[in-house]
Image (cartoon, helix red, strand yellow):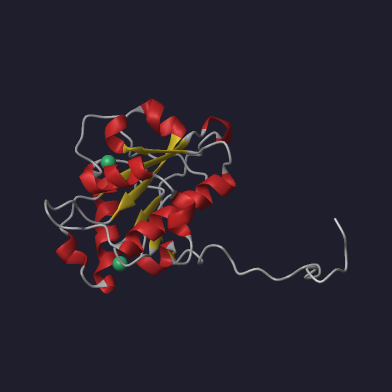
Length: 194
Ligand SMILES: [Zn+2]
Ligand SMILES: [Zn+2]
């Protein structure tokens, strides 16, 4: 390879970031109650991410300002009715492309339905449902999920799997739309600027 020729663009050409930054809504911003505990996942045991939906009517989240209240309601249900230590999900993403921090990276989830799946898979949840004949998972939500998966893979390079909740437990969760998206894969492409 010759240096200094006409094709030499020089070192350190700044590159555009491949992926837009994740739009986090951190716990104080959504009004999270303090957790009663924060169990850790064994990072060596992590295999990937399980995808869920909240099965709440997306029309209730038509406006982003309603989303935080829905996430608080999930947390209340998980802590008060289910008796769990915190909201069960590591992250919740909404149709507007925001990612609400639940248990966060590093924590063991309580959402996957079995001890084994909670030991090995993080849990991320779409704030919405899957109405027949309608696209509920917006392009913003798809990208937020893809960005989140890329971020998990960056932090846990060996945990590359993306699985629907229904792989682990007899449930309709996360709906056909998200199952199709998971089958399709191509997360790095989806996470990029379009
Ligand atoms: Zn689920
Ligand atoms: Zn929202």
